[in-house]
Length: 182
Image (tube, rainbow, N blue to C red; front, side, top):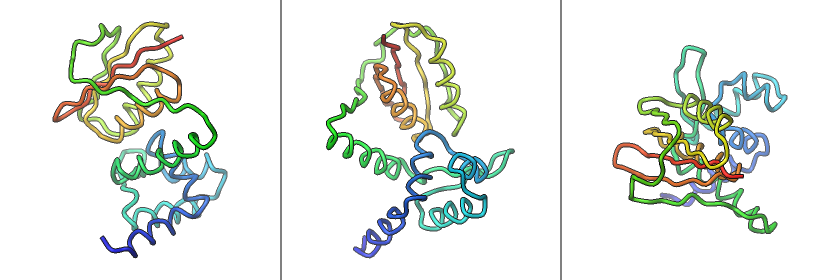
C-alpha cells in the first residue's frame, strides 16, 4: 500500500456529508433516494457522494428489485467508522459494549431462530430489529448470517441497545445470540 492511498482515503472521509452517509450505512444498506431523504439533501448530491465513494472502493453496489443499494465494500470499512465512534465515546467517557465471542454452540435456548444464510442487506437487519421488539426480558433470539456486514450491523445495533450479545463464528456463517435484558 502506498502512503498516497491512505491520504486519499482520509480526504474522502474528511467530508462531513460523506461521513453522514457512512454513518447511515452502519445500520443498513440504502438506495440513493433513502440517503437523500434521511439527510435532507437532493438526490443528485446524494448520488454524487455515493458514486465517489463507490469509485474509491469504499462502497459497493447491490442490485435489488427496488434499485441499487449502496453498502460498505468490506467489513473493514464498517469497522473503521465504528472504531472512530468508539474512540469518541472513550474520550467522552461513554461506555462501549463489545460482543463476546465463544466457540460453544449450546449457550442459550433461543425463543426464536432467524436463519438468513444467503440473504444480504437489509433483510437480516430489519427482521432482527422487528423480532427483538417481540422478545421479553431474559428471552434470547438466535440470528444466523453468512453476510459479514449483516453480522457487524446486527452486533452494533444490539450493543447500542444494551442487549447481551454472544457470537459463535463458524467457517461459513455466524450465529448471533441476542439476549434481551432489562
